Image 1: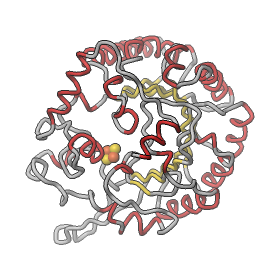
Image 2 (image 1 turned 120 degrees about the horizontal axis):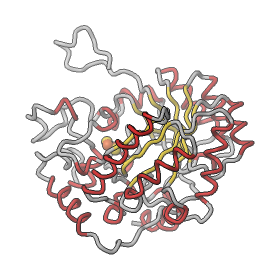
Image 3 (image 1 turned 180 degrees about the vertical axis):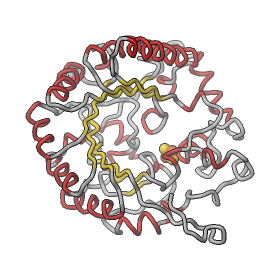
Length: 383
Ligand code: FES
């Protein structure tokens, strides 16, 4: 963050621009992953932004200094104007990244994205075997389509970037997941342990792995890293750990309103992809320009810095390291968005994390899964 020269006397540092713009183009999705980070009540939200409105958002954010533009959803391929949005983003000088399930993709569309200047495609998988993958995706065709598209992306000259969200149902197969990635000649693989927001929080009892599962998965990943490096395989395995097994929280989004800006399908501007559930009235790009939203709105300013902190964060000598952790997690678990993230062992709500870990140890037969789909979302939207 850039700071004024008079910072010692001026307590408010000058806020730098958003660096990362995430365009959640739509909440529509052909899959039903039970760990989706979209809001539970997505079906109750308003009309999607038009092509022109999106391009205007890209223009304003770029002018402020944003450099990375991610297209996600729901499933961004559902938008028929995706090629056009990519082309406009690229023309503005963004590094563009498509985050997709691969459902709705085909060779012609990949060629059209290439033509439009798309820099990077990331395909997500649910598991390494067809049955588990399709069970989690809620679709019996998903796995084959993903395999086909991962190969096609590579054949058309993109690096192959794969994402596996890991949890209780697939984490014991991490070796098979890595073998699959090797077989596909993947370049980058994100083995991202599920984070418990949105639908994942709703399904946490069914998804949270035990500590032993997690430690084994990390050990196996490290063994593969060594083995593959010794064989000269350039694949990069990125293992993302879940904070439920930490004693200190993460510095979520690298700080609230520091570098990250999400725009939801209906134009609501958020400092993180989950913030929509917080009791804050976030601004909308249909009503205000991004400069005002980023610098002046209550929603973006409220958790900047540390003025908002209450104890134990306020007097904690580690507060600069994690800025109190994740505001969404504090709200979800403690019912108070101003509280310390309960992941922190100093939080008076840390027992909720301990209880979740304990439940993961005890879980025998799996509790039922609530799939992320329009029908279930309407039930949440009705309240
Ligand atoms: Fe919203 Fe952490 S996910 S602040």
